[in-house]
Length: 411
Image (cartoon, rainbow, N blue to C red; front, side, top):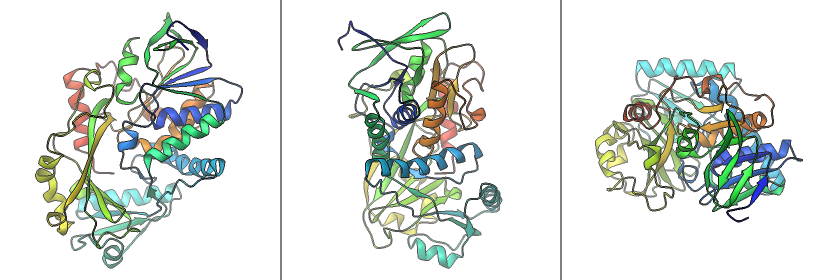
């Protein structure tokens, strides 16, 4: 297809991260007679997806996320059977550690949610916790809970499975093709301009990650999220980090950790999260410098909180620092669905650091809406209009979104 060509499609998806790939998969699976085209200007799953820590957390204080993650676990098995390959999910379980009365109350509320959703979860002793995670100092624990059915995965592989299964069913996935702008008449979408020509379609999904507000801004839609840096570190290998150790949430330290091939992968919330306007984020993040010092300033500034529960923190070497932009919202809820009064334009954005775990529910719900049906999930918490009219490029808005990540206590 050259820059002057025109083609027709039933659905065009902008963005080849895990959301876009999941939407393409579900759409073509449930509408095999339709034509779906996914556009990715770089390589699939190469931005936020591939840089994620990928904690597959089903049990959350935000009930709105739980059914979406349950669907991700379900569809993972479906895609493994389809491709005859193993995604190699690590079902290590999640340990929730409460070392203050406030966090004990939060944990008790979470255990009630587990019961409500029929998710297995139970309290364990300090001795059991120490055995599961030898690196963890358990002395200050008031309550420790364990959720055995949760785990983590290779996020790039999961995104690739969605893309491969979509292709297998006939979805057209085009890498190196950029969406240049929307085509619309009045308040109805009619297609999209691309670097290889126009695609005429009555339905476009904006799943462009942290760049999503740029496309939506063309038609006066302010997507309520902002690109905020997520970062984590991986230690050197040590015997205190068993391969089968569980993931650990340390809300009193605003930190999380999980095993990583004999090392420990951990993240800490810095006081002032780096935020950028979507217009200032480079199109290709390959050589973008998220931290000039490899995150060391943030580690030094915030590491004492983690060291309280991880005494070897100051003795174990740091081997890797991984950073990327995630789309954060002030209420840490996703941004999903349609825009009232605008026909044929859907948003799948605002992952808030949970994009890998919720990808199944995002993909299925948005794909059903794109086909003119109702999402099987309750997206009421994710409405694009919930903050009223906003300017997603203003400094005030960007700082609001950055503050949401800085205050985050979950994984």
